[in-house]
Image (cartoon, rainbow, N blue to C red; front, top):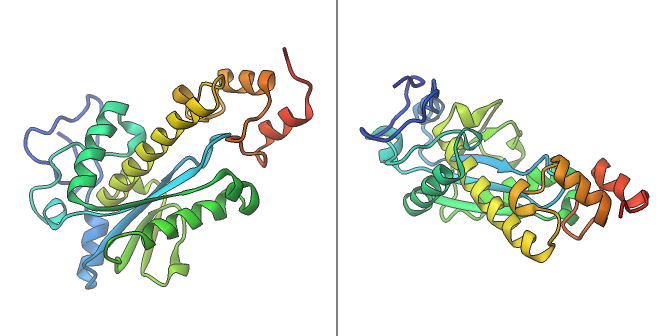
Length: 231
């Protein structure tokens, strides 16, 4: 079982075929060596879709996951996991870690822009943690404006166990919101593509026009507003 140095998994936890490495705890260990004990991993889901909110999550993992035997379930970059694997991991993470999630609405995305809406959701998720963290590990986004020590890194969900856990919480939370939107706005297929710009989604958008869940600041949605319906 190949893994990055510092990765922790309990014996017997299945690793999908073809997975070469798993998120480790080297970044967490570096912060711990500097005296930080409550390290929150932060990530988002939903920057790219044409519809729905962007959801951020903050997760402070248990000490045993970081410095002991590791998580009792597969924790990986959420994009590398199946929906069933993410659901299993979400159940364990939310039961054993300190977690919070926050969603920036379509109105916020259109008003602030996707980058600033993402930062808002991340800051809000951090604020909602039961106990404030003293350092952050973040996927891509710079959150140094929070005033907390912050390490932002590319592909952090593939490097840091804490960020990977946050990516799972954010992804599962957003997917569930998109299932609700599918019931509220039928015909677009939100339950399947989760708002991403798939051919089926774009075809429905052109035929039906945008619904309240669509991000009007995104070009394909703007174009659909200006184009005649394809009936």
